[in-house]
Image (cartoon, rainbow, N blue to C red; front, side, top):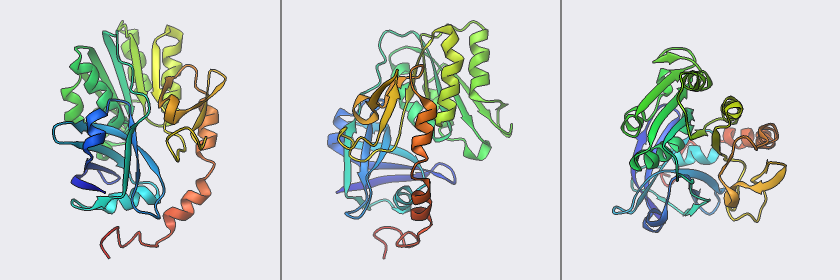
Length: 281
């Protein structure tokens, strides 16, 4: 069992949980993820590792409460215990031999982009972070991102905070201004990662995307997380989650991620145990 050490609501929809998981924290690296299961009846859900503390033995996850399992997880409190917390899984992000990087996050994807930026910044890399949100109320991790970047650009769709723009607009402007990036890392909605990759492709800027498709076992056996990369089938759990954004079939990925939408809506709307929370009968 894995005890929750800290809980923080970052906004109305996004929650931070710090979990006591010393063996995971010991080996965790930027770009990797865990798979949790609340109880024996729960489904297996992947969450990217947002941070870790090797001395404390804790792992931090930041997630959006959108489905039944993440809503149940969000209803748990400090001191509650999670049945399964498996990891670290996936291949760590390769961050070698770069001098100037743009890290582009969208919404809750900024929680995944943050550890990437932190790892780069701590290596002495020149890091620009571009973080996009729908509105001011949804902005998360602003102070944290400021500490691990040389420049932080925050933009909102409606202009309610900082610059009114899309992340692709800001990235294009920075490229036009003469910033020569060795690498762009982009994490967020699939459609956002697709268009960031389209911006960088004409300039031949290496672009890494972090994919989070449907995933069950995390070992490559179920095949649920398959994605097409450069015309070949890859499994995000063991071959990723990072891939070359110029080679990913984003349209196919978006179609596959919507495959179980009806079942997900049914589970989300089902009130069995959801309103009571977990472990608080």
